[in-house]
Length: 293
Image 1 (tube, rainbow, N blue to C red):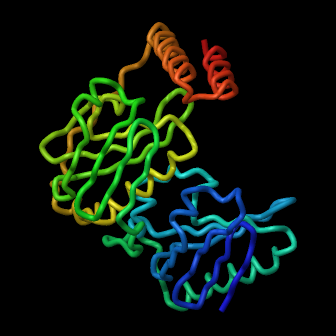
Image 2 (cartoon, one colour; image 1 turned 30 degrees about the vertical axis):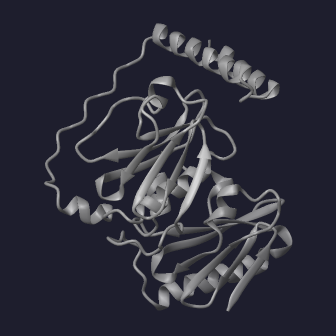
């Protein structure tokens, strides 16, 4: 058995599976803490790498496409602190990390594990029931139903419709998108026969995210739902391959950009006045927008 123990977590390999346990350091992200220990079967791996740095190195696992509902639901958008398939390695443990890497690579070769995509999930996804509050609402999932409830920061038009209960059988897709720059993030559910193009701020089937600490936890809800939907590879096989080319996105003019920045400033001002943003957070966000103007 190969094992490496670090502040960031512990990885152990018994020849058949890797057991990834997050560390107890206070810097460990909320997502990794809530996700807990992961057991990754050898057959779900496409590769492993170890990168050395001056002060610290990093072990990385690469999973086969389609093996993990969390990776599919987040579309590769989990940033470094929240990625459960990375482990920070202190410089004095480089030798152990290299040995660990060799052991896993040797097992992949010995078992002749292919690196091509799979058409079934090889990891179960987060356990249910679970409930997460972030952004403008709370998303809960019990394995059969999704419950969306709104808070006092929700847009009036969306809040007026009240809490939503969505049946898993009616969901065709789920997506988690983190906030980036001036763009807010979201957790969105696509409901069969009820598509919408409304922004998450107004979409009753979406929770809008503003880039705060608990946002990544919404990815757990997305992954738990994704794990119980038909695997995308199998769903794609049932759909005719001929698809129209998507229209090219319109090119925003400088005037449009300026208006968007002004709207964002007003939104940030509202969040600051209501206490959602601290003085420091508001000052940093405002400075970033003014630089773009």
